[in-house]
Image (cartoon, rainbow, N blue to C red; front, top):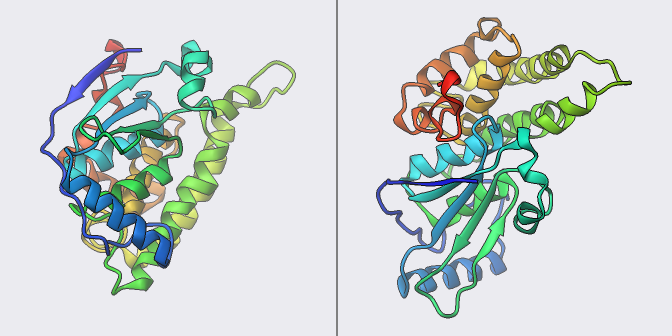
Length: 270
């Protein structure tokens, strides 16, 4: 595993009332927690973030994009899935699911705050939203319909597409005795998900999937589109997705998170 430091501007902490991106309402305990976090952050330096990542991992790419959008500095530690580094005891201690990403959060200047690790990308995106108000990923709370649409599109990718097309599943369907064409399997499920995404986004998209601001939906979509192209899915079959992806790829936060731009990307693939 290797590491590098991505030098982006410091983050800005949110007010206690900043809404999250997954729960529809914020209960009193959440508000108390946000008050606690704000008070803690005001008395110590910003958290230190370490992202355990793999260049091809779409879930890791979601976090790379979000961290870049919010200008949050982080240390990248690469985990080679093809060499089974995710299955080592060292990585299992960090992420019991033996997957990537894992976002490690530390508070080096605080004697009271304990560091912790988030091992699911959507949970990590929610956490980042709660502590950093810059470039909010959900639409404003005053537009619950748009927020629900963003969640729906993100879930199509994160719940319907990615779990059945990730490397763990593709290794299983391609092993001796199963005899399933891995690329055909992946194309089938990706295209099913993209058809659903397209049907919704066709009526909600502006520059991006929902309106003219990058949202959680886009953060989930663009890595999925990269994976789709890899297995032969033609984005031209999904004109709204294709247009949004082309627009997203013009953004620096997305360019810097692209799988071709990572330190662990093999030279021949850059």
